[in-house]
Length: 145
Image (cartoon, rainbow, N blue to C red; front, side, top):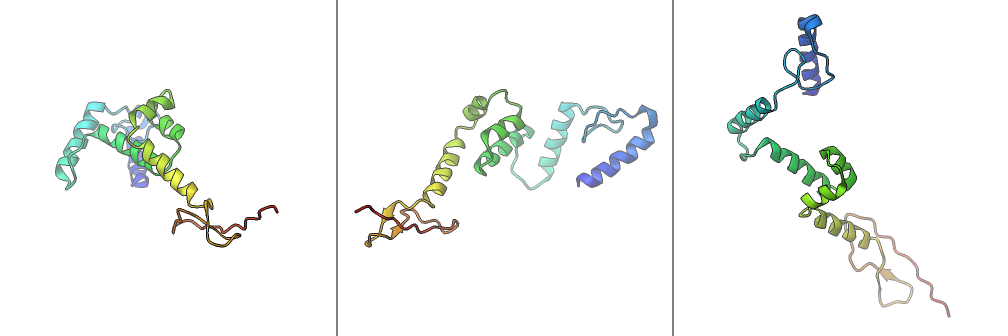
């Protein structure tokens, strides 16, 4: 889709000639100038009304992106930068509903690879929280004496 959009934008650039406003933007008006934010919001609302999707606002996509990124394990600093927040504290404050689940996932992933409990034999170690999706390493434990 972006390649087709770029091709269309190239055609518009040629047709406008010297009047083309080259601002280096991906999404512009036909002459390369800035899109009006209210026009984008209005167009998005029209598309949502026509599509068989839940009714959401354009701004909701921003929150969806942040929540999905954090849930996928994207670093908080990266998400914060992408959202344009001045500090990661702002991002963490706004997305506290996501951050605990990310922390829990991280803890479970780490716990899945750490041998935490011994089985009946002295040298066998079995993880308490085995994970099917992570390789589990069996470690031999040697005790002095």
